[in-house]
Image 1 (cartoon, rainbow, N blue to C red):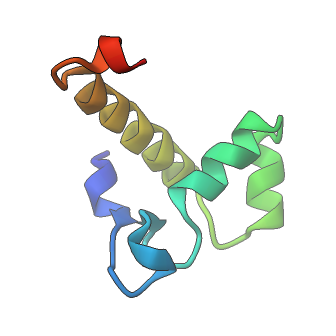
Image 2: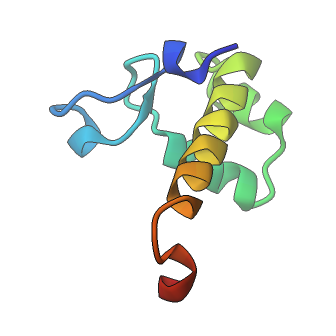
Length: 79
């Protein structure tokens, strides 16, 4: 699964934040739900339009963003 098939960025939607399949649900929303302790099942129950693949795409997007951020010059000095 390629997260780029699921995560979209549209300048006029949610201020250009990465969203799931063009909806108004952002990657950040899903990550915050997971970080707060919600299970995948709880998220899917609360948001029936989401799928397991959507949640996995959010995690893959975040991991890729972190990998790219870590490869920036002076990343460790700024942290």
